Image (cartoon, rainbow, N blue to C red):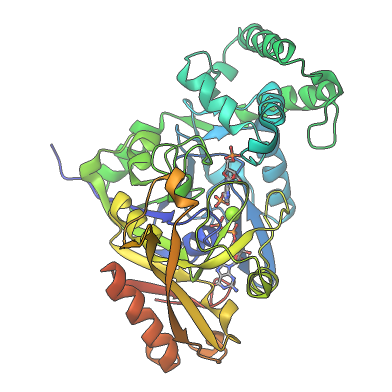
Length: 432
Ligand code: GDP
Ligand code: IMO
Ligand code: MG
């Protein structure tokens, strides 16, 4: 078989919101194609440039570069109405997505009733709820796996309305069994009927886009020597198989997800850029060993603006967790680490890093399973803060000595090089 170019990957190594959008935007210049491979509008990827902030949900973070192809792959789940809103917003900013956005014919559709199901299941779980983004992600992937989901290709077919009604009826059956009063719920401030009308209109607008078989599309481009960057959503610790189950999302957020979500062979994966914050955050429920419930956690939240870009929920904050980072590096085969948001700790006198977990008197450098995560005690190393404005540094040698030592310490601990340092939210605040 002819040698193809490789697909490089950017993905999150923690519980999401590591700054993937910013990094993809900054790395974009080296690539021809940017492709999302999993997740959906549960993602909120923030890009900042020219003094403006943009949040992308389903559209890849290369969209502002008009010479780049942006692909929504088959592993992604799409809410046509949220996608339409995203497209409309971009149009107002002078970006016509109809020119450079391609959509997989196999991507599954999030129906309005999937969103209501998400709410119904969360409600039924009570205190044990996952704290989902209520975007219908879990129910849509469930219908994909049970082989009754609707795909973009179905939306193009003459019998779409019939198939839609059929799946909606099945969902109403579930609402009835849960005693869930679905007709009196709201979806994005609209009653379900109003949302459905707009949603069905948005489905028709999918026809305005180039609908492709992403697996052929990507492999053709690779054969032509084009450079492809795959953009992960969520984070490794939210992976359906290896994350802190059940407090996870419903897709494979790891490098393996690139293969299944785009149709790329494992042998065609190139560099894997793992993005991590210099501390940890998590939205929603689930274990978080290094979580801070004190002023320090609040300081991280305020200085780092740690509020969800999709839901506005305050993010839980805590110290950097190296057992978790080692685990994520292992699962993804990370070749390059990218650190973000260390600048949030510019004023800190000292900074803690969890190097190991302690449980029942013994220590381990390894991540442990969900049920044990709640009871482990983090073992910390305390490092001196740099007390300098990191944004001033334009090259790695210009970073303060204490920060250099901090980076070296992390690299040694996790045996992987940090090749990019992000010093602020703007595209230009990136040290390669
Ligand atoms: P994503 O989901 O991984 O793309 O991350 P989000 O966009 O949800 O959250 C990351 C937040 O941190 C956004 O508001 C970014 O603008 C911001 N950000 C990214 N990198 C940096 C950085 O190095 N320093 C600071 N201060 N903010 C950053
Ligand atoms: P980006 O791509 C942070 C979390 C939710 C919840 C769990 C399941 O911006 O990093 P879901 O709606 O997916 O069923 O929710 O996953 N979650 C995220 N947390 N960043 C995200 O995306 C997330 N997407 C989902 O808060 O705990
Ligand atoms: Mg985000």
